Amino acid sequence: MSIQKATIEELDSLAELFDSYRVFYQQESDKQGARSFLKERLVNEESVVFIAYDEGFAAGFVQLYPTFSSVSMKKSWILNDLYVDTSARKKGYGEKLIQKAIEFAKETGAKGLSLETGEDNLNAQRLYEKIGFIKESHYFYYFSL
Image (cartoon, helix red, strand yellow):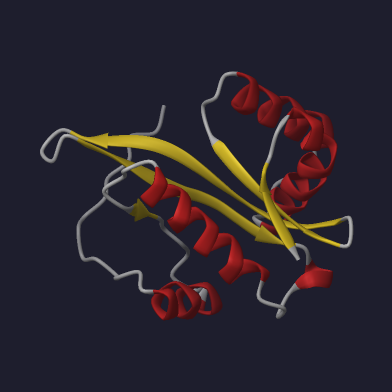
């Protein structure tokens, strides 16, 4: 297993995984849309993506978005997307990708990482808590446009 920061050279492999990730969340498959979305994030340096490989096979990815805390005057990262291909699950890829995200956050002097997951995604919740994420009780609001 190897994990590397994704560049435009990994776009095709990454887009395949990203499309599968979106389908997992009940979205229609849109491989071209996935490729365009990721290309824009990478080219404009709007996110950081790490991709996991197993003998050349793209097994999973984690995507981070930057955010900032005005109160602490520090950067934080949002662990927005985590996906492991169905054929690579239960082999530690998810945990390794999260550990890579934590390592990266430390390297960039960030305050921490935040994430959210579905109330029914118990496997993910167990993994996050095992790694050391703390479930918070803040109220989050969203205004849909």
